[in-house]
Image (cartoon, rainbow, N blue to C red; front, top):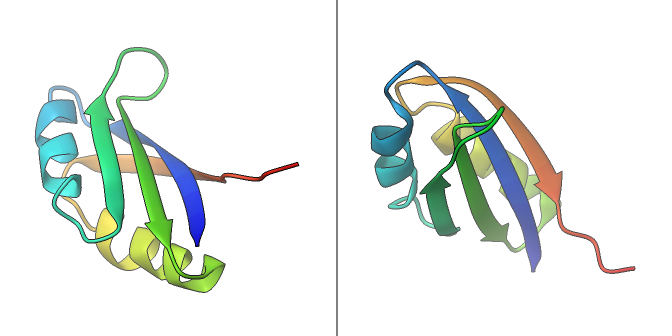
Length: 77
């Protein structure tokens, strides 16, 4: 199982709506609207890195109101 944090920038005033929509995507563990340089922080999981990438590109980035994403895979050192 691969997990990642997805940091999301949104259009002004869209953070709450984006977080609500993303929270319903299969594989998303948590989606929260936050303050700071990013507007939404998501924790997601998938079976493989490729599957995680497909989720981000095909589902997360397609949500209306998102302007940029940064995916940070979780590593265990």
